[in-house]
Length: 342
Ligand SMILES: [Zn+2]
Ligand SMILES: [Zn+2]
Image (cartoon, rainbow, N blue to C red; front, side):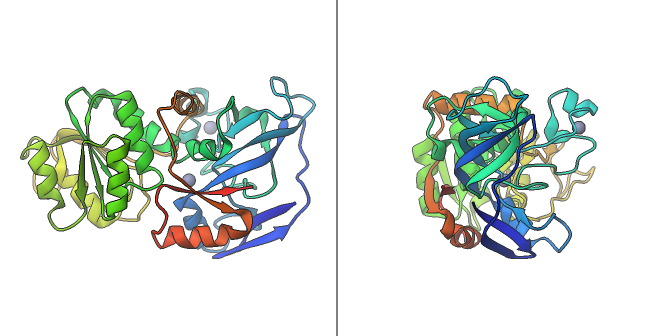
């Protein structure tokens, strides 16, 4: 079968490999679609040894059951499934609470992270990682598993603050941000303020339910403040899907006293947090660095999509253009989500 594999730092190669064997509790999935994620770029850019090589990339996977391990029940060949990508230990206090994204023993364990992922004709996954998709389109479904799940989890963590009539700022309307806007629109009555440097991304945010669209630039904070009011008021929740110094600074300056900063984007910026009233986050504010989400949350994300309330804005690429898809993603030329279709 074909597979797009990390073979060394910075190198993604399309190669022929044997179809994976499955154990008794695994399912062999015929891959239908795989979302191209910014974190794949981090994997590509990582120094030698940071990830196992060769490693088939792709952790945002939807496909159809091809073959079942002998101990697997509840699935039949041909059924559509989404892959929950996290592989926690299943035994620590976090995993036992269903919070495998907080596993205390396995750091960053996942399909396409610590073992072969979905950028291939087939992927072997433990049956416990599969969720039913019903008749959802696989190309639509693949981005739900990370680009949908990650902001959904961030919103879940901030949900007590997302009261009707409050403001939520979403910075960065890319793969995750355009899902965040829809999840907020579908599950809250907050005023969504979208921020991006790209006019097309802001148009998309407005179409998806953002009340206000603010271009990123020197007056971003003033424009958001004109909508939320001056400090100590402000946005109750800020979800930064970019995470560079400039967006973190915007987030810090617009969040309300007692508000919530959710740092979703892994942009490598730094946010100063000091017990101080000057040049730090506001008093009583909290900062979260959410990671991916739980299986239960993925099931809810799939339910939102099945109800027609969550659509990925998708640009399709065949597997032999996977390298190009990541190049475009790196250059910021993908709106919504790039999805590799097999
Ligand atoms: Zn990802
Ligand atoms: Zn664990």
